Amino acid sequence: MAERDAASRRRFLGQLGTGAAALWAGIAPGNAAQTAPAGTDTFEPDVALELIAEPRRLSLRPGPATLAWTYRAHVVKGDPATVQELPQGYLGPILRVRRGQKLRVDFMNRLDEPSIVHWHGLHLPDSMDGHPRFAIGPGERFRYQFEVKNRAGTYWYHPHPHGRTGAQVYFGLAGLLLVSDDEEQALPLPRGEFDLPIVIQDRTFGDDNQFRYLGGARPAAARGEATEAPPASGRATGGGTMGGGTMGGRGMMSGDMMARMTGFLGDTILVNGRPNPSLEVAAHPYRLRILNGSNSRIYRLAWHDGRPLTVIATDGGLLERPVQKDYVVLAPAERVELWADLSQDRVGTELTMLSLAFDGSMGPMMDRMGGGSMGRMMASSTLAAGARFSIFTVKVVRKANGSLELPERLSSIRWPLLEDAVNRTKPRTFRLTMERMQWGINRRVFEMTAVAPDEVVKLDSTEVWEFVNDSGMMTMAHPMHVHDQQFRVLERRRGPVSESVRDGFVDQGWKDTVLLMPGDRVKLLLRFEDYPGLYLYHCHMLEHEDSGLMRNYRVEA
Ligand code: C2O
Ligand code: CU
Image (cartoon, rainbow, N blue to C red):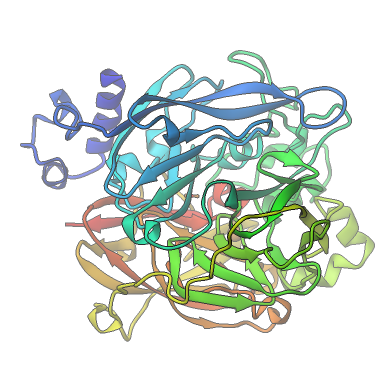
């Protein structure tokens, strides 16, 4: 363990100037290689966990068991309730922590390929953030130690190895990380059985009940056991080509090639790692914590009977006050929490969460081809982007004692001030680009540790960033995620094609992922605090991320 950490650390230190490294670690230059990671000796965790990624066979559908890659966790020290297994599905356990808690997680990689865990939405030192440069090989361990600084909210964890994030998440590796704090605990929110996780994902199963990913790839069962897929198929090279390996022999622009470029869409919807989700509930208010854990699918959430959605939280926790929506658009990695009051519903009522139809997300070229035979041939899924379908059903089976009133005020937010932004009138602009079938940001693709001059920000500064989603004919929707951050959405200038989703954005709360429909420009306010270092920002459509629509930014002390 210590050796592993030291190795990661040496690699990490090698990427910085010694001066910066020394500042970061609080140690003298030259000692770096011999010194244990900062705080190892003094760090006394409140909670210590072991988190293991490994293959597992699960019975998800009638017939043969499905081989998945799953997270498993157990508590080594501290509150045993920190780990809550979700029975039956492939999803990782829910991790429940409190703000201010010191957390240690020993991650063990029992896959047959490199992996690393990213804590999506958390504000962390960069060495704890699960950057792909820290990926560990099969059989290796990585120790995370950090204090939970985020406000109460619904965060999540998932793998982040370079070029393989899409495949590893798809094969099952993801879980929720729920943070609580005093402000939230003081509110009369639904708790216990009335606080429900809802992780929405899409998958495609083969006749043999096995997951099918790009090129027909499936998870390997154990170390050394070969994937049962053509060799090149699952391995997006990232950064260079759009998976050149799959092009040969399949003709130009096969569905598979297209799926790499537009994002993989499964044809079966799962909730909490299980298909055909339905849940028996009481006539009582519920807190629904919804995560879009899909690789690339966008949902337009609405109740089937037209009742409005009451939104109480976004990516970074509770809103200041509830917001009513006819529908909510949820892109990959985004979270939304709903107050679903079923207390007036009679026993026997069934309520279905739908994804309503929408258009435009695939952009001008795909829209033009979508109706034709060309579009059908190239579609990666029988369940098209923007199709209407049901996601899950709740059935009221009993009355409940007592009820709860939706609070008018949920939290107080201290936003960073626009006046404080160093570039208030001149936002840092990130344009999403597409050239020679290669996604990029400002025409650059991901390189492991590369940072361009316009990707360096100052510690303790506030900035305006603008994402611009206009890459010509190939423009499509992209959910942009910034590591280490919860930001404020200052402004959204809509492109011409987002009519059917226009009222579905919840920009009122803290966000770490923001969806840009084709033609959209979005301005964000970000504050860089506490930790200098190297962090990622990228598109959270995982096939885009794996193919290089990702860059580093550096926070400089
Ligand atoms: Cu949810 Cu860089 O990731
Ligand atoms: Cu994208």
